[in-house]
Length: 264
Image (cartoon, rainbow, N blue to C red):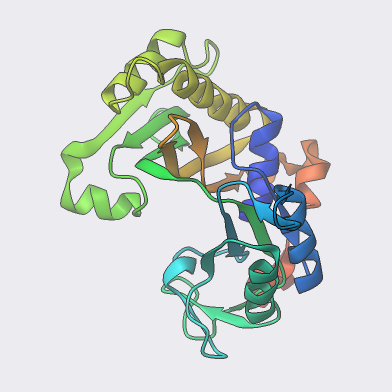
């Protein structure tokens, strides 16, 4: 079972993983209101201004949203904006429309929700995931300094840039392993603690929710030195969902193949 980005971030936050503030909207009015809540009142002008900036992201179970195209002619499922009014306008162009990406096929996916969140001033992008290693039947950390692109692309073009770290499922991700990964990913000394905390949170998420994969791509370092999970993707062990009714309730059948839904 897969879930939406906004749901993934809600789960990560429960395990102490830092993400940009944001909420999901189903209507343009909701998108505008969320943008207002994320901003502050400029006393000089009386207008609500976002703290830094905002991003509006179409929510579908597919990658390539930023480079996708809507069938109404609007380009891109991820857009930056600077005001609640802009957030509303962007949401109105996405909601209820079909977004086609390289992963959806020509039929695309209908966008029923958008995530309105604070944008991050990105200094560096990193790939980080914890997945089930089929060879050892245990957790495996996979990382790369080449964030923001699909890991399959990195594996094909620059396999030497992929870092792997086996994790003992009983002992968990040890602090020395987290520091080792952070150093291999070129975090500076001031960021080691935040990076290690994020890695530990991802491992605890993986174990605590019976995941087969927790992927953060990109994990970013901001210009302020913050370490944030900017986008996240989860895969769950379907056989363990009976232990997680709250996660099972996140299932969006509209995003699934009708034939698979009927078969299940």
